[in-house]
Image 1 (cartoon, rainbow, N blue to C red):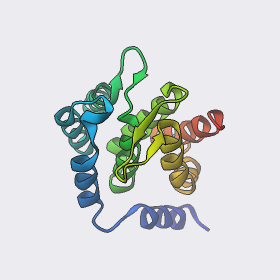
Image 2 (image 1 turned 60 degrees about the horizontal axis):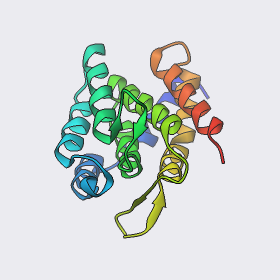
Image 3 (image 1 turned 120 degrees about the vertical axis):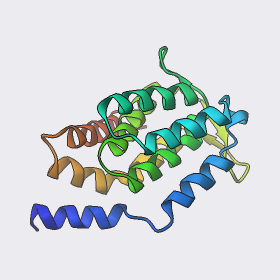
Length: 173
């Protein structure tokens, strides 16, 4: 299969019907305050992430999201990182370029910073491991991440995809 066909396959894989609505619904129902986060800050940060166009905006969005779901400067995640994992994956699926790369970079740090035993209550009222939620969300992207890494391995997006795959497997178990 040619690189062009791989990219088309990848693009098709990532385009989800109504993904913007899914992101908004997840933002509204994330229970952010119950997980140590300010709901307004999470919503503003994720919405800002989707609008990133420049490297400077990407850096700002990265910091705003990590500040909303944790304490960025100390590498301490709030339990809100659990429900945020699915939202970040939806952003990766719904966007391209800088927003996608920034969301990938956020997930890399979340996998590295999650604490053993950290839990949250999911939308169905079940207690869930933050680590498991992060890993499950990223694992669901694994086929697409392999394609991004293989077709873009010398550009920042491809490098970020490769790094997220490495982080996923580094933090196995």
